[in-house]
Image (tube, rainbow, N blue to C red; front, side):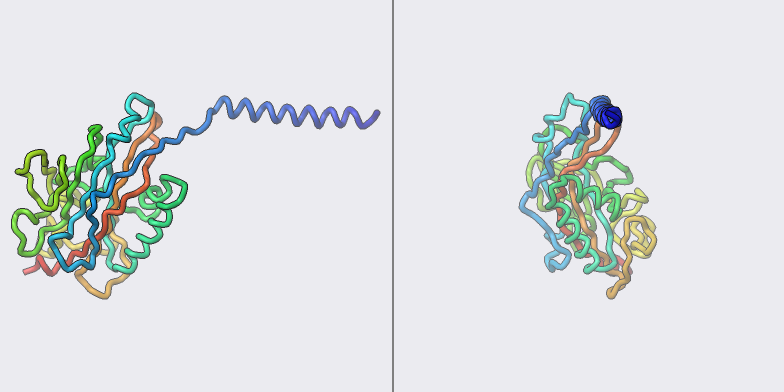
Length: 263
């Protein structure tokens, strides 16, 4: 008889704890996960070691139609963001690409984007001394995006640095084409006056340097040569302004040699 009160006390304590946890879960509610569809590959990708300068541009197709289902909910699909990082070493860039790719194939949809933004500190691409966020705001229609970071050496107007959006795939700068809109020239995120036509004599296009927040510096065997890695992602946020991201789309990488632009 002496053991029954002790058993009852333990049983009551267990039940009290159980119901307290149940009430806590019901009161707080379950986390809501928003699955965003990533931007789409338009068939073009560029690598920094390409010898054909005419293809050293980035392009993709936004995925706005599939993400428009969030319209009217407490979650806002905001559009498509483009992230970049400048590396002083191609091997350091490729190492980062491999690590990001590995995360991008995991079951955690936003793992790669979170790593890209919060751990590797990739920065958002801007244009024409503005800081639009995201780069391509949602309009509920899939659109093609074309980005050339720097003017091609000896190139004509069609190979100039530009950010364009349109209703068809673009392989060069052609804003006069019906349905194509030029947004301006690409700009680095931490200084909206800085472009990618790296030239030590041009205050609007100074070469990257160690300590710049959009640069990963690991030494360089080729001074004056820079490698830019680019990714696109669908982005949104809920009523509490918590951000959500889709899986990433790797746009590729380019090499920029500042000696092209020096006197």
